[in-house]
Every structure is written in C-alpha cells, then in structure tokens.
Image (cartoon, rainbow, N blue to C red; front, top):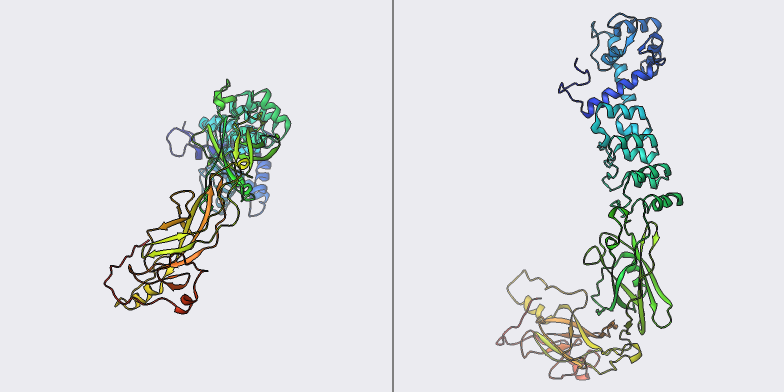
Length: 551
C-alpha cells in the first residue's frame, strides 16, 4: 500500500514529506487524549475548539463533521481517516459545502500551528518527535537548518545548546556528526560549554568530541568560552587537555625606520600601546610556537588564543612592558609556527624578552630569555634649517651647519645620518605666466604634494650638503632635514622654500625672493638688495632648452 505522505510517489520520504508526516501523526496523538487509537465526538469537539478561528461548532455541526470525516461509518475517526482529512484528501460529498470548507480550514490551521521539524523538536526537547523524524528519514540526523538566520545548525547543535541530554544521546547513537560546525565554526561542544551544560559537555567529551575546533569570528574554542570552572575541569580530566607549551627561539632586534613613513603590521592593541611612546624605539620580536611537536595527539591540543610578550630590563630584571597579543588570522609571521610583533621601548637601555602562550586553560610558563638587545636613543635636539645654494631647473644644492651626530656610548653609540625631505608646493609664477601666454585654453595646474616625501640620504653620514635632482622645472618646493640612526628618526627642523627656474641660466627665487649667483642664501638670509628686487623676472628669451620633468 502506498504511503499517503509520499506525495511525489518516488517511494522515498524527502524532508517536506517527512515534516508533514510527523506533524500530522503527532497532532493525532495530541487530540487522541485517551490514546484509544481513534478520535471520538468529544475529542473532535476539543480539537475544533482549539483550532477553529470561525468560532465553536454546535453539537449538531460536530455530528455532521463527524459524519463527513468518518469514511467507514464507524462513528469515530481512525488514524488513517485523520491523515486523509489533514492531507485534504478525505471522503466524498459536496466539496463546495460550507462544512467541508470549514473542515479544510481546520486542517490548514492545525498544520500551521502544530507544524514541526527535527530542528524545532531538538530545540524544544521533544525526544519522541525527534525519534519519529529519524525513524522516518535517517538522513535528518545531520540535516542543516536552512531557514533564515539559522547558520546551518544541526539537531545536535540545538539539543546541546538547550541541554537536552537524552536527545543528544539518541542523536549520537544514530551517528550524528559530533564535530559538525555551523557556518561560523561552532560545534555542539562549543554551545554546551558556552551555555554551562556540564552534563552535555561530559557526554560529548566521552564520545571524543574535539575541543580543538574554533569558531571563525573570534577564533575561540569550547574551552575559551567555558561557563564554569567545573566545565574547564572536565576538559582536563576527560579530554586530557592542558595549558600550551612555552614558545622557543625568541629573537629581538632594533628596527631602523624613518619618522615620516614608518609602517608596522602589529595588532591593533599593540599599535595603541606603541602610540603612547612615540619617542621610543621600535624593537622587532620574533618567536616560534608549534604545539604539534609535543607528544600529544592533535585531538588533545587546544588552540592557542594569544601570547603574552614581556620586556625586561636586562640589568635589573624589572618588567618594563607586558603586552597581551591576541592571535588572529592576520597575525604577522612566515607560517603557522612563526610569530612577529613590534614593541616600542625607551632608548638608552638593554632589554631581554620572554613570551608565554595562552589557551582556554591558562598560559604556559614564560620562555627562556632572549639574547640581550641594546636599544639606542633616537636623534634629539635642534636640527638646522637648510640653506639654498646653486639652483638649476631640475636640481638644487642644499647645505646646513654641522651638529654633534653621535649619541653617548652608553646609549648605543650609534652614528647618525642626514636625511632630506622635499615637498612640491605649487607651480611657480613664471610657469603660470608662461601658460597664460600660450594659445592653450585648457592649462591645468600640475600635481602638488600635500606632505613631505622623497627622503634623500646624504652620500656620507658626515656630509652637510646634498644635491636634490629629479625636480620639476618652474616649481615651488619646501625642503627640510632630519637625523636618522639605527634606533629611528629625529624630529625634522624648519623647512626652507625655493623655486626651480624654467630654463637653464634664468633667474630664480629663494625663500620667496629673487637671487642670482649666491650659493648660501636661505629663506631667512635674504639681503636688503634682494628684498628690494621684488618677485622674479619673466624669461625674456627662449633660446635655452626647456627642462621640465613631470612627477
């Protein structure tokens, strides 16, 4: 005999057919209050009262309804007749009658109000209903909830979250995937641990559920979200989990950087801490941490959630800085075992570093100390303003006064180097006048720079002059100098302004005034003759080659 729920006639029960079958059979059990196997007139009246949106039926109407649904004339509604009714396939008679329309509406309301599926049953703790689903369609034991916002939860996820131990036990007996993960990577063990379901955690661990799987949003595992100490103790006693091993091979070194273009890839929290010590020196700290090299199996290794980096004064042993570094997907490093951060420390001291790994059960012992790293002092003090010398259309000579360029030996004794930064501010008046004098009506100002860049290092660390080339003709520039050593960059001094000429041999402006020939005239060193000469001259001849280089 064909199954009335197999609506497509393929001999198999799909999810929709299974849901309909279990819903209707459970509804029959509910309204068959005395469990007699049929529904009598009193039970039909109770059914109508609970579902009918059109109001109660009179006794005469109930009698007519019983006659309409009682296909074999037994005076009661057997289970198969109830199924026919709720599947809207019942009996004969005038299908357009008001009574049949009302009965059809009753069945519709019943399916809507009492409708269920295996996920709802698992969440609500209805073991009998869950068993009915699995008995009808065994594949539902690992069915994903595809409804909106369900995140592909499976029956075991819902049961573990709610703490329904018997349903969890039954699902596991039917080969539920104990380590199945939701779209965000959560497992049944994760939910049970998070919600404080101690008995469920114990059950799942005894069935060898893995605590090493982490969710993808924050990288947390079941131990990390454990709600009670008792649950954390279960991970130690049953799961054989423990704190991580200590990191090894700690290497620290001072980073060389420039003040204007310093870039780091450290974690957000580390950046915030480093920003408080802007005058400090960046130190790179690297280490190795590989739990797989321990003698434990992969199932016994908890994921590391972060590290504690400790910087100590090598002479006094005092902890100078301690930073918690959460491990995440964008952690620096060459591979999964190598890690790297940058720490900003005060100069003029010697440091050693220690690292501890952290998981849900606590931190490891701190590693052995790194080798001593000496952190020098970044250049400090007054930096001279450069003086403009010989100017050409695409180059300029800058000079400046000498200063002490060596830091004290006890602070690193590092030799410093001069760096020169430039910024193109605008087109010169000569360029703009030339553009206005052409036949072109579409002249557009050339690109400028909003910040200093294009840092140039002097040929020798002790030199106090540099020739800047690759400049743009007919342009106003700013230039400034600063000192840099292995520990970082000092603050730049005041800038000087100058103007590149349009043509080789033409006059030009330095510091906003016109000058010729002088090799050491800066923006603050103009003579009275220059001040009286006013703004620059228009180029009179075009017999010289135009030197223009776009940026």
